[in-house]
Each structure stands twice: as structure tokens, then as C-alpha cells.
Length: 124
Image (cartoon, rainbow, N blue to C red; front, side, top):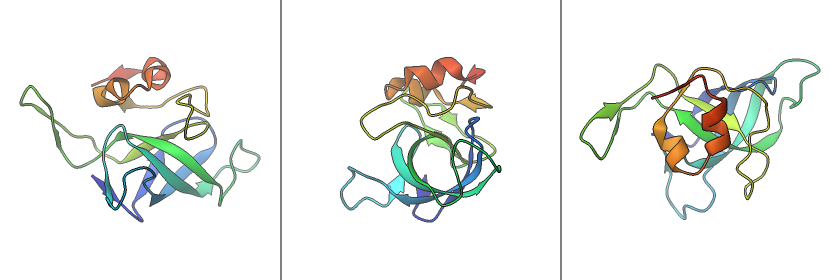
């Protein structure tokens, strides 16, 4: 579970390294986001001459969280870091980059982000 002002790594090849959660659109007054949710982030650190720049406000989808999440079969899933993948626009579910680094939770595919799941090396 991530809340406002959470810092996470960016798990794609857009050039962004770290992102800062600034909002959860479409959730009303909810302040917590989990795996598979669309969030708004600000890029805090990026490579020079990259596709995205420092200070850009972009939508992203959460692919990994440190806090364990219960699944319907009774098992739990947790990761070593908080990570997100930048996406094109709020309506579009396609990623901005062409590669996704590290494992991705199965909930991302269940949320309808099939392209992100297919680009990932592993799905847990």
C-alpha cells in the first residue's frame, strides 16, 4: 500500500529513476493505492537526454509494493521495493517505455495491463 508522497523506483526504460506519488485519480477521498492502481507521479530523478525529464507529471501503474497483499486463494505476495511503470495517458493502458525491468505482480494483468505483463520478465 502506497500513500501520498511515497517514493518508488520506475521499472521501465523511459529514463526516469525515481518517482513521487502525488495523487490517485478516480478514487474519491481514498489516500492509499495498491498493485494495479493508476496513480499520478512526479519524476524526481531521470537520466539526461531521456524520454522523460525531472519534474514531469505522468500517470503510472503500480507493479510492486513492499507491503504484503493478500490474494483470493489465501496466499500473500510481497516484493523488495515499491515500483511503478509509466503509462501513456489515463485512458490508455499502454506503457511509455518498451521494456519492463524486474518481476511484476499477477494483479497487474488482472487489472487489464496486458502489455505491461507481456513485457515483464517474470509474473508472480
